[in-house]
Image 1 (spheres, rainbow, N blue to C red):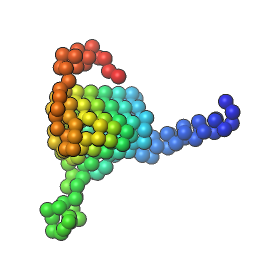
Image 2: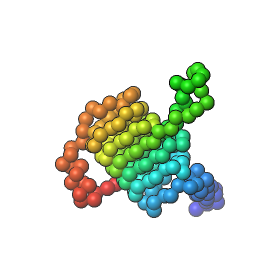
Image 3: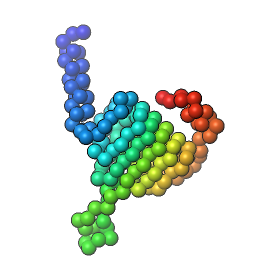
Image 4: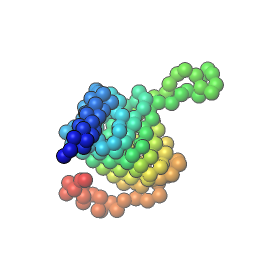
Length: 169
């Protein structure tokens, strides 16, 4: 390995180490967590085992709970705070409304998905790339669009056999 490539490798390793220490400060990461893209988590983020982040930003002061075997695509955004547009000024006042986000086990979030506060996504759900999730998604449902709507379900027998046999990626 020549010096140019060694220097590039060390720079990338230090950058990943820096992000792990500074951007994720205060977040307890299970050993099996994989961060493959720039991700920002808050101190109120609670992670299950075997979570894969390919680029997820969590904004706001709400609690975000993510279950086991979670996968996200790139450029995903979870927003737990909104401005109070019903307050004493327009377009909004200086108060913030905070709502939690709950993500179940074995959930796959596609690239460019936005999830707003107050949403619960149940076990086994899949969210199509580019979707904006503003309401709850049920067990093994597949949703997409803006706003996200359920358009299909997973094969329940296949899903439950994979879970029973502990076949997780």
